[in-house]
Image (tube, rainbow, N blue to C red; front, side, top):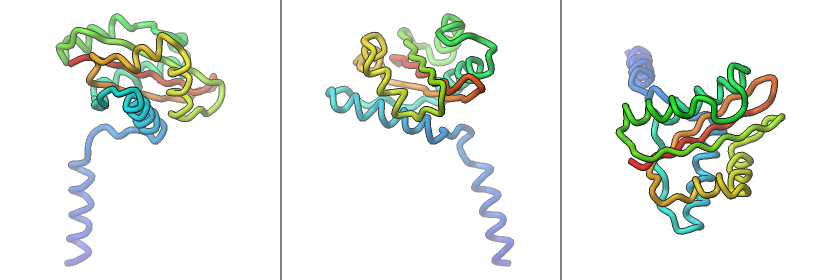
Length: 148
């Protein structure tokens, strides 16, 4: 009976687990982003699963070579965000390394870039999504911000 209860508990735990879990590297980037924002007296960003899904999809497309490194398709992502979240302001950071870069490295590179740093510190942004993917050409990160 005890083993049946344990099996049932484990089965239910997985059944009701969140449908999205951050990879360790994505978690690192999320935490590094909020640590940097705190140092600059900015409010922490809330992690949004919809934005994470879009960010990971974009990183996967870059890693697979289906799209080039950059912001291709950004307008389509903005429309999806507006439709699903009703937000008015959206920004995106992307990062690529030819090696297995971790989330901290991605955020450090964004901090060193004036345009990316501006996105990281924008006071109007309340939510963020992060997505990482690796491919034969390296590691790709996408970070999407929105204000609502």
